[in-house]
Image (cartoon, rainbow, N blue to C red; front, side):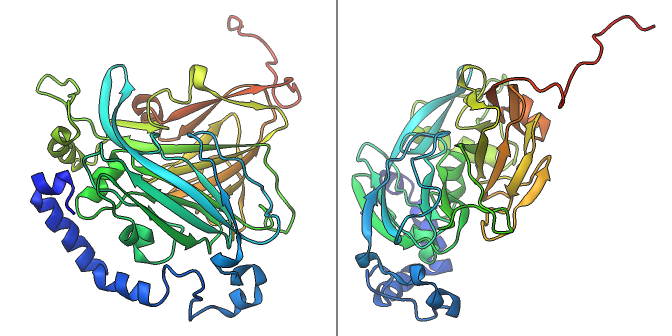
Length: 393
């Protein structure tokens, strides 16, 4: 079944076939099915000695309780246990794709493809050795085919080969969360459609917590009172001959010129959570003095460098792996394009804190900034104005 894009632009259909054929192709999907890729009771032949010794790693999906996770729009994070209770679970999530136009700032609009209607898509949370069962829905009102590649999944292009759905279709697939950490997910339908869909905001993140919860690297537990998910996105809105941002009535009308703008590698906007100001001013993130806040930060396309102005990263998993010892007391940390990171900070002073991409050009002039409004009592021992401004003596 061809989607509307393939009917109107057959070259994209060929690109998709070339991409899949040049990587692993349909033959590997068949091989995966034959070897139990979608079966409930299959065990990987090459299970490591460590996995065999870990009882929690050896459950199969048909042995486990099923739970539905209610996904929430970012920056909020779904309800979850920081420490896993009992056996692993099959965590069921539903992602419905919405193709729509959004306002980036002051009348500047862009077409997006959004998981559950938000840019970024919602954060998924589970524990290591859980199974995640994703139902991906592509309503018939859409015009493009879509799929999902989860960097936390193993095999078949991260699930991309098993989830391609045309408008009016839905698909369900399941994967085992074998690695603990923070990971990006995004649409990857093949060829030039991959970067275009990602640049249209079609990305999100999944956090796979260690079963025992986060630790400081020496076995001491770490706890967070709040968690926020910040998805950084780069948009490429073309300009007309007068230098004004262009608008398009239909999604496909924008494609050719957006792709040309993307080739310059110069974003028109670099934003947190879908728009300039989405997390500043009245949309500032609340916190309190003494609270530990976990920030999950993803960037599907470009390198970025989060920084808390007036604070630090007490514990940072910049590469996203919770198996790594966290780095301590960082001022700024690097998040590689196509990955997600986590940072834990306990706020010690009240007032407005800025959470920014510390390329300050991108933060201030392009939009990659957020605010945290912290309530509590000021500590003069940490900072005090010794003398007010006066004339130079």
